[in-house]
Length: 315
Image (cartoon, rainbow, N blue to C red; front, side, top):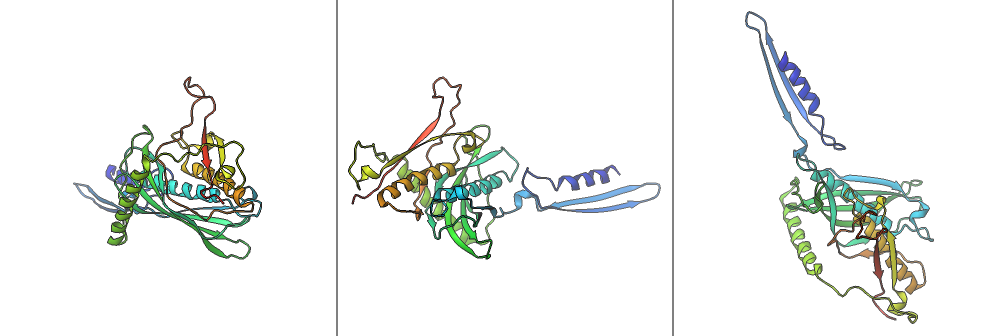
């Protein structure tokens, strides 16, 4: 009977997994008890479908667009969409990287491939952000994200954004330690080969831009109208707890939102009309923006990062 009690306890434990991660498991229990001078108890237990064997299911985040998400024309800011895209990618990447027993980690954004804004989203519409893991290397995860907008009055839906992001798992104990990524299950062999090609291409691009310099434009005094100096803008943001990950550095989505805001100011200054984000080329995240503690004697009490944006063409 002790074996039976142990088997029942195993059935209970088989349904438990990592916090926030449902586990699919099936436990088969066979039991045979014979009476007589020599009572025997026999049980067989078989568990299948542990969480490490399961492919990562898509992550879907949904929320309604509010007035503070949009510009004066009612179009949702591109930075708001970028932030939601990054959040969905971070959730599914962190979930996958912690799907096996081992050191706990959180996924950090390393690169964003080209992001297209196919259609504007308006106040009152519901955004459905769907993220899915499409490839995993030894130390990185590729996530593809689609954004759908829904008019809840008519039920009409349309695709507004498509993006591809790369994440790396960082140890919760040591922020500078990159952990290995559990493999993902592919539905067909071609998916793995195509993913490997994309991985090699983005890795080369990151190496080419890692040491690129000369991209910082210094401000000019009293610039002439409709020139590069006239349109350029700077944005200073005070980093707060809501901007940071569990490690204490800024979310990639927060950084992208700030980049979109300062770029939008430049475009509006130059065009002198309402503007919207149309696309975002590849973004590489080479270093982390940390939240500086006020008790650090060698650091300023207020931590901020400075973003510059400028118009590329003079007219």
